[in-house]
Image (cartoon, rainbow, N blue to C red; front, side, top):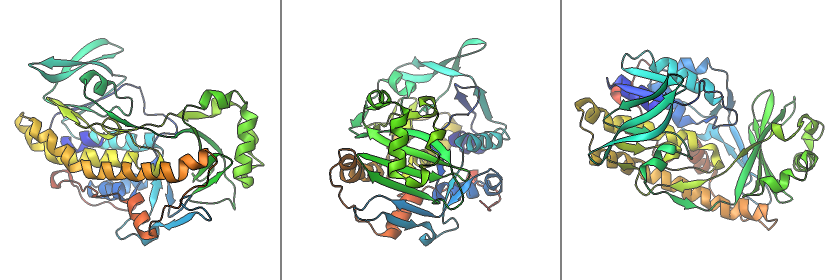
Length: 384
């Protein structure tokens, strides 16, 4: 959606295909980091984002040390945004869609599921997709796969992806939050589990990390076992774990960490999780995807306007985003090895020693944050 908005503001004809009829999906990436907030300002969307209900997180408590969590104060950041915004992703997508539809060259088709790639002369020439009206073809000089870690477009392309082993999957669920409960983001480690508590105002979004592939085995033990484990890790929640009525209240995130050696082929580019699935560590996936989109919009606007997108243009997008992606994944793999895997195996964890200011910058800004290209900027509307 971000790429479509940026390119439409350059006058490029853009069609976004969304296979669902709406954007309502719970427990998807909801952490909008300071780098993305700055981008929204540059696009003139600060005031519109401020009107979307969200929580501001200024402090994080991360279980990166054995004896005490690492307290990260995002107020140490330089720049206009010294916090992370927690916003339901469907609200953010609705806002971006409304803004993009104000551009005459932007089109959004909901309920449109891509099932095949069109090819001509050895290159991708568009897609085949289905909706309530039947099957259709959509031809384009460039097709961009933004369809996530299980990308069907990437699979159809035949492009290779390198998988990195991960030790965890995550159960997502929610419990009521009450006055006096911890705020911000905090983590608890013990008994072979890690619990991440995200303050969402009236409730906690909870991430309970489990051994990779252990979902069926652990569910067989019954929901009461999960209630007991959550109460043991976070005693302040013991009086409300009964709100977990059954396993239907618990969503499984199958964690993947991978990266395509080559993000493109003739007429096709993969970005975001389609190009590099991220671990949930740090909640950085949505923000790296947005950074990819802005970089792609900057690099490809001119070639798309002239109708001649070449492999070297697509290679420039990957080259621009490779270092931040590889660096972030390397850091996530370090935390997997030093903290998460030992914790899940009930072995002593290792300290990950990083200065608080560096952690604040890495989490909230990332490495080499992108800025909106001049052609996509509008009058500044801050306030988020």
